Length: 156
Image (cartoon, rainbow, N blue to C red; front, side):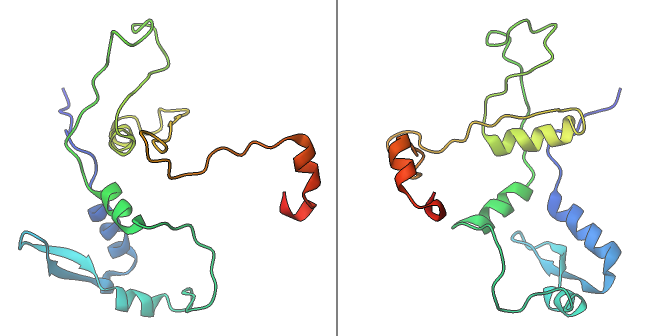
């Protein structure tokens, strides 16, 4: 019987291996937060190698938000968790082709990536914003037909 790994993949190491295959000269070593030597990337050398593709200054399209860098770091950090079925909340558990999973979105997606890769047809994630009392995001865009038609086309 094959023993399951009980943590998600370490995407940092995986990405460094991929870059190492393409550009071995950019791989160097540095100390991690616990004082161990770890492979890392010399971004100055990588930038020099890719300078024909890098946009220096000027305007570019991007999708960003405050905390994006820490969110990417969290997404690549391995976790030690597991999914457990809730038989009481599941309908027709033995024959079900659909599963309901409740938990932290990021943790669940990491676990699904490892165990169910290429076996999932669709995931619906209910976004966690506008919960509690702090309504951060404007998510009510109701308008009457008359008011909609009053606006010029380029402002709709």
